[in-house]
Every structure is written in C-alpha cells, then in structure tokens.
Length: 447
Image (cartoon, rainbow, N blue to C red; front, side, top):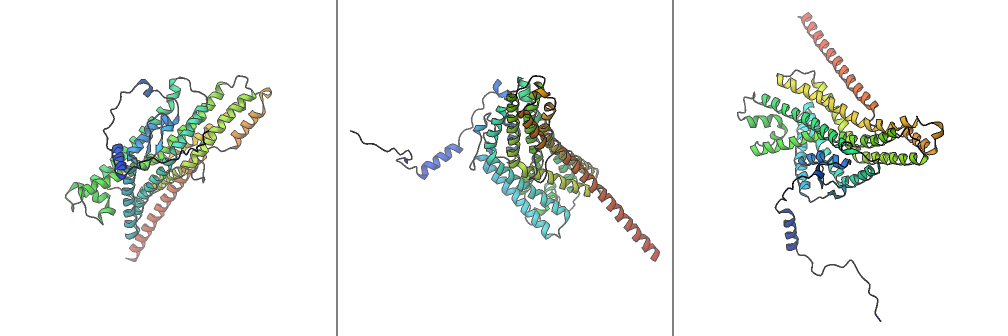
C-alpha cells in the first residue's frame, strides 16, 4: 500500500546560479553576432489589414529617435510585442531623456536668470515640452502591447476585407502621410540650419564657423560651459531628437485617428453594401455589437493618448501665436524671411491636419444613421432602434484630457481664435505706431 505524496511545483533548482553564471548569460544575450537578414518573401509584402501591421513602419522610425521603446515592432502578430526596461532601445531612450532633460534645465535656468526674456521663454518651453512628450510616450510604450492585442481583436471582429487592395489601403495611407509630414519637418529644420549658419557667419568675435554656429544656437548651454567640438555635436544631436519629436507628436495623433476612422469605415461600407437587402433583427444586433466594440476601442485609446492629443493641440497653438507675434518684427535677411513664413505655414497646416484627421473619427461614427434612416416600416426592429439611438446620442471622438472633443466644430474654434489673435495684434501694432507718431509731433511742437 502506497502513501500519498504531495507535489510541490514551486520547487527551486538544486544548484543556485552564481553571479558568474548570471554575468555570462547577460553577456551572451547582449554580445552576439548580428543575425543574417533573410530575403524577403511574398508574405512580407502582403497585409492582413490590422492597424498594428499598418503602423509598424511609423513606430520603427520613432524608435530611431528614442521614442516608444517597444520590442517586437516588426512582428506581424501583436502578441509578440513586449516592453522591457533593460532592452537596448530602452537604454537609448534613457540616454536621450537625460540629454533633453539637461537642455530643458539649462534653458529654464537661462530664462530665469536673464530678466525673463520672451524668446528665452519660448526656448525653455520647447525643450520642456519635448521632455514631457518623451515621458508620455514612455508611459504609452508600457501599455502599447496590451492595446495592440485588443485592437487586433476588434479588427478580427469587423466585416472581412476583400482583396489585397482593401487590406493594404490603411498601410499605404499611413505611409504616405508619414512621408509628407516628416519630409516637411526635415525641410523646415534644414532651412533653420541655413538661416542660423547665415547669421552666425556674421559674428566677427568667433572665427571658427562650428563654434559660432553652436554658440549662437545654444547660448543657454555655452554661457555656463566651455565650448568643445564633441559637446557641440552632442547638443545638436539632442536638438535634432527634439525637432523630430515636435513633429512626431502630431503625426502620431494623425496615425491613430486614421486607424480608428478606418475601423468605422469598414462597418459603414458593409452597411451600405447590404442596405438594399432585407435585414433581420439578428443582422442589426451583430452590426450594433461590432459598432459598440469600435466605440469601446476609441474610449480605450483615448484614455491612453488623450494627454498626447492635448500636447499636440496646445503646442501648435502656442507656437502659432508666437510666430504671429514675431510677424510684426523685421527679418535681417531673405533667408530668415523665407524660413519664418515656411515655418508658419507648416505649423498652421499641421494643426489643421491633426484636427481634420481626428474629426474623421467622429464623422465616421455618425454615418450609420444614413443607412438606418432608409429602413422601411416593416423592417424596423428593436435592435435597429437601439443602434440608431447609440449613433445619434453618443459622442464618439478623441479628446484632449477630456476637456474638448476632436470634432469639426473644434476646427472652426481654432481657426477663429487664430484670426482673432492676429486682428488684435494688428490693431495693437497700429495703436502703438500712432502713439509713437503723436509723441514725435508733441516733441516737434515743444521745439
């Protein structure tokens, strides 16, 4: 007769690994020969229609500039995504965050110690904004794998996409929009370098062109620290990271909006395709459930990125106001004039693009009512009524920290605010000029 034996599955290994073994494992995982890249196959160029697959290139581009350090971006299966604090891309993000934090600290100190000049405040705001944006993307990177798994689950529940073109249209739209936004951002940054070089060459006190360029652009650093070549290029590297992040915040909101509006567009296309058929109550129940899944996805995504949306809108409005205020000043050269107006046009266009693409989510969520209004009396049922009530009463849209919803009404409000600010500045400038003329006349009368 045997005795019962209690099994303990939480047993520890007989030999505990020493620190030598742990060090060898760590070195083996980090110090290894790179894998040989395999030749691309036909499956690599085919799309399955998911948002994760469509946005892989954008996120991979962001990781080159230390944003979103998530592992497994290129995998087609979102379940292979993972976030690791000890990955190489995470350490690269830590390094860039330390550098940007140093620039933000020095710019704030330089602004506070030099009589609170407005242009120095703009520089401090720029670096503090990018530092906070990097923090928000780091927080989002921790939740990104779970978010993409849920998004893929919602994509699988939507009506199927027929043909290769329908499955690839979202990816190509995202790629085209990303290329346009980043190309304009690169052009604007190169033009700013040309303007800065043109201005720094006129400085007779510094004979080295590199030293003159870095000291004129990063005076808040080299006012307190001595200049060196490696320090100058390292400072410029962090500045390039900030300029990319400045544009990538807007691009990220646009890409997320394109993915959500595409999900609603799939439901709308399926409804318009079957609107002439006799639809049963079961059909309307299934479509309402799919619509509800996408609405829940919008709410979940908004909970994750609402702070980034608020950053995008507030930053663009701030710099548009700054540029409009600077429009009253004269520029020293033609290069500075071209750079100023090119920068202002890009800012306004990017702000309108973010608002319009984000408003598409709300527009596409209202389109099912066009099909529901065509239902005949004999085809009206309880599920169709519930579906119509959800479409008409719910406000499905991205928000900025729940303060405002990204709808087309917001575009009009933002445009009206910019025009009002411009008119106020013009009137103020005219009043100031008239006051100067009156003072001159009074002086002439006294003489």
